[in-house]
Image (tube, rainbow, N blue to C red; front, side, top):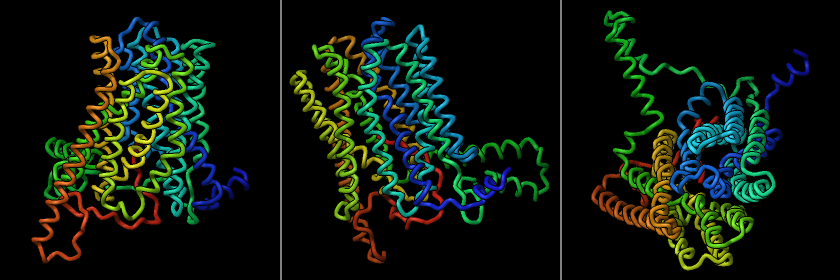
Length: 490
């Protein structure tokens, strides 16, 4: 190793400055390449149907699997990040994403597409996106909130550019060559990962390096050994395995929180139910427009309009919801955004003219920005921060299940009725019912907690706005490295 390299490795990499902004730029590109990518699948919907002679339900499984794996692979991504670091996981994700799309260009059946573009590309996108978000927490401390807000604009950029690029390439090269090119584009996630080098403190220790932890179950094993049991005893080994399994489930899937915390229970059920209809317009809007006589390039433009408006509205929504006036009331803003999203779908039922569809996309984008900006902020309000990572694991898995089954079920309904209006009826039903359920349930829970607090005069400084059965006040932000989390974005 040269002296220059040694000096470079030994030198501390300061947070919130210098190379951190290059990492932020890489995170913006990552979110555009990963979270923004599924939005363009609707452009290929009709071509894939004709190519494989598939129904609406069969074709919709392809984007559903991709989105579900992207959202639900968080626990696995978290384990890999702890073991190998963010840089490796981002680059692994880029490799899987590119491999999946290249393989998709050679598919001979729609079921093969489920495996290649759905599972492999979805898992790769999950790894790249979530590890990319995690590494921002290491590079930014003072400006962490700003960094995450700037990085989220990559999703909107992806929503804007992917559909336009897809339609352009589809018209000139066909879907197979387009998927081949997409494979090459997604390999750029590896370049973004290479930029995210492990950060070093002045002491020379790597922030990304996980500290040695006590093995789950080791305490129980020590007790058994102290009682004279052999470490190779079958009963001890079986007990250790059960303990490890239980602790892993408690760490990454917070079933205990789900059973004890009413606020988390209501919110998780409500969002999971909402996701049954949330993705339907993104999957079926382009096929619906083409079915009603809108030109293909104009139909693809509709998704880009949603992304373009999101670029400006989402940061404003995030700033507005962060105002102290809305402290403890963000769940009601979230429910209002979901209600607005559901009601906006009736615009498509009234008319399918291009001008009307543009109006629909504008209104839908405003509601979607509110949901996207508030989803995880509300989760932080109802769960203690030291258990947030665990609560997020169960939350995203349940969310991914409903994201998986929603579009195919609606596609089956469209197949048997030959009426695309059921796409928007279904979306409205799930969004409106979820909004009413969450809003009314939290209102009732808040009143219950107020009555309980009033009856307990011995409590000191009772919280006025408390959603769950236990204290959920956020703790002061630490200047140390954050806990590795798996984060999704809508």
